[in-house]
Length: 531
Image (cartoon, rainbow, N blue to C red; front, side, top):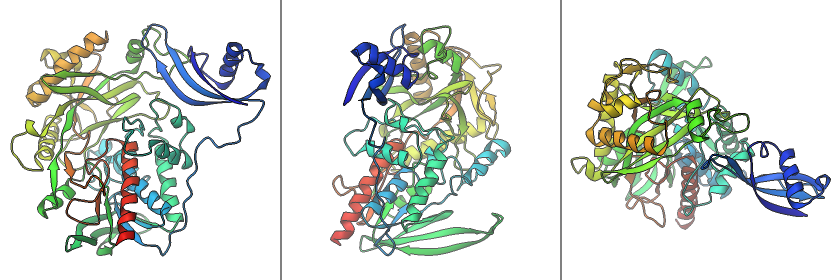
């Protein structure tokens, strides 16, 4: 017999399968010897009251063992010799588009301007060590996209555009923990996600697809408003990894899935220059806010002991309205660290990430202000992107013209005071004390300060000089939307072009980008079948 139960447990009761079995046995009068296995279907923490509970939905196997796998497998056939589709970008949108194309019997050619997920580690390390940013290999560009070294959070509120559950199952099939299927806020972890991404690439290659690294699309080729291929420039290296030459060429195909991510500004400029319809899109910008993790645990779990032995490192979520614009926390990283996420020279951009254990000394989150197109002067399609660039350059200047980041103690920022010293931080390139309240744009700084005051009233101890704000957080989403038909997902004018994922303005995170990648693959397949 298989039964499902809704359980509300103390953290120590939810700590392992045996203690859950014990609880079910007592609560429902079952002989514990008959409970062969318990599988967690959903798990969430309820810390709204003084006593913290864990809510579980579990499936108990009574007098029988589980016969099904913990996740749903997807079959990927061999697609050698099948019709080809170019996929530009190997982030979640591009990878899931490529895998879905294989399911449907098409051969993906994945073109990625950056390096493979392991090689880019060296370039990322150089940002902190040498304060140099490789414009083609950084936290934004390379296999896995911006998400590969930015935490691997898999939470999405989008339920109506596609099958988010399938995305999680595909991750499990490629090595992610099955806990992502049950956790309320699933998370793979910066330390584990690269291996999962590599396994996804190996599936693509094993089925006859192609993945080309350090191959940058320079032009989209089209005739009579129909895509016919791309022009590219590729780096060639010897066995020691040294660059030996650069090669230019073309790849011909009748369909192109454009999944370049939200930082490919050269692509946006190419689209604008060539009359491919795009429009400015609302975005959010602000700072990274970093607290000691122990303090956040104490606040969120209402206890001087913090998380104790049985609870995970605490998360938080805040949102308010200030002068008609949202102010909210974004991409919260418990037990994580702040990282330098610039994608070019003379920029300072910060982001956050957590390892799978979430056991670091600090917790951080983006604290951002909603910005709409009408908030920025002008009428150009790239005006919000250009606003981003100006703010990132200003942060570079204020940070000392290196990857050191301008920072200020949180309460000092609210009071409009310079911080004469700064707390210890996880941000490895280093911090420079700077009056962010003075030089950041008023529409951001004043709303942030009032938002912090609100959050401090809602959560006692949150607004403190033990916390530090680090500038600037600007890459929350794409500043541009590439306009596409809502039914076919094709660009409204250029047939065979399928703008995809976060960079196209139609997703906001790993899961939603994966969902959009699958949808674009389905529409590209349909387009080719009808051609």
